Length: 353
Length: 113
Image (cartoon, rainbow over all chains, first blue to last red; front, side):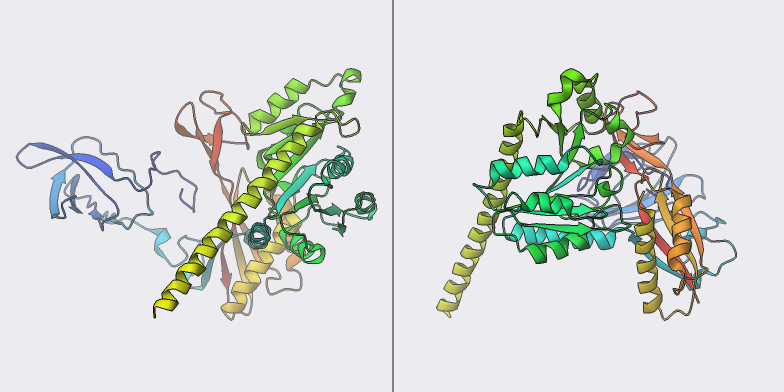
């Protein structure tokens, strides 16, 4: 993708594979061959004489080969630019506005004073999130980020989930809200530590806030870390907190089309909990349609139908969390094993000296 | 969306770069915002003016380069233009379209003196 105008490149992008093309030699023989782009490969397209094209490439056996050829037919050429590869399109008399240091032309401005930044606006947040994720992984902690609109029953669902799991695993909770510590108090009443973050005017939690929360809560090794994000289906989708999965909660008192109205969130989530299912007999809500809408924006979504107040469907959700916890533990003990082997190897080398 | 925090993120990147380059003033900030990034350029413009007040980028012009959306349609096996996130393929109507372009939010370059 061109970064100036957004125009697309070729459709085929197969990493590590070469490209094939055919050309006609002076004696009339047609010759097709493929070559790898890992090799240095220079291509010059001089527009005059019409369509003549010369290039150098290395064959699999190592011989280098340089030749010129004419193009009568169409020549489609698409390749990955990651490979070490130089391309020169020396078309006489062409103007290249993108050749200056800024890589783009801005009328009336001297390019020398432009400074390129080319950084993602969310890079800072993503950096904090990556640190958080590394801290979680190091300690074998399984972290979930619960997102929904206000009033979907997130806190009730958390309280019930904690009650079902707290005998088996250490849990701590981060509560995000604009104001009040009501939710953290509800969580603390279950006996697990909770930290309230008030975002004030902010509409979401960010990686930096969660980093501080980890420092304050000091979650135990191989524990469950639950983050209840600010009730908002828009902004939290864009802010990675370092969690392993986003869990979106949709309640049956909302509209079936919510996943279509707020697709970013349902796309960012790996799991959707359809909550308050005990109310279905009294509502006109079509649960199948809601699920189909959610799968339309995210075909890989795992869906659980639950009622946090009545407990229906909660066991499948709790089983899913338990599997996640086990996977994190497994990953950690694997990396501990690798480190142990490395220590043993280094000690052996040291002893040999 | 969260344009205020995005504007603050932009200012942070601009301030870091301006400081590194020993700039006195930032005259222009160029952003690249994809059509599928759920950022409202007008709201971002408004927030940018608010957060740059009193900073090195005070009064800087803001240029927003809008990048058109595109996606890879699985049934068509082709790149197709997209006007909305998670919309249907304009060729076959399928929703199996993976956004491939137009999701970016980047600070591209700045002009300093």
